Image (cartoon, rainbow, N blue to C red; front, side):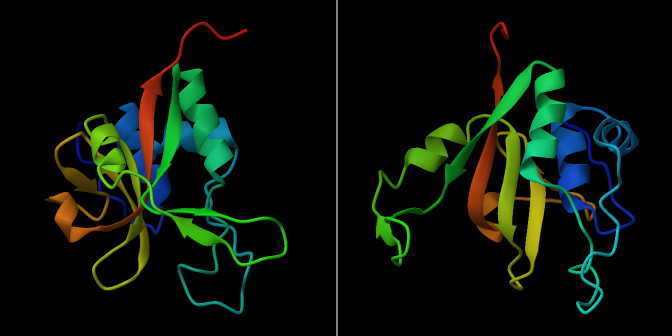
Length: 151
């Protein structure tokens, strides 16, 4: 995996490009927008921007013969209309999947939402840094998986 440093607040786009080994501009062309439309002008940057829906990113993976499995660090269950309860799954479950490359979604140590690329061993932060997973508060792991023949 090669580092691609972002110069705009597009961490999901740049992390996806690193995992897919392509240029962020290729993904922008495929998706049809750059995620920088101001949708919430009352919020400060970068929270005012549209960004990308996971389904848009998934389509880019599928076009290249991949998908991604969303692996939650914590799992919750509950019927509609009630507060969900945390369900304790095998705490090592996410670590087993993290032997594969993918995208880590969560927060930086200062609590800001962020997405980073993961090569199975080290984080590639689109801010231009590499570090270990202990320095990132993981919410989800989007595990890259090779797809079989599509119908």
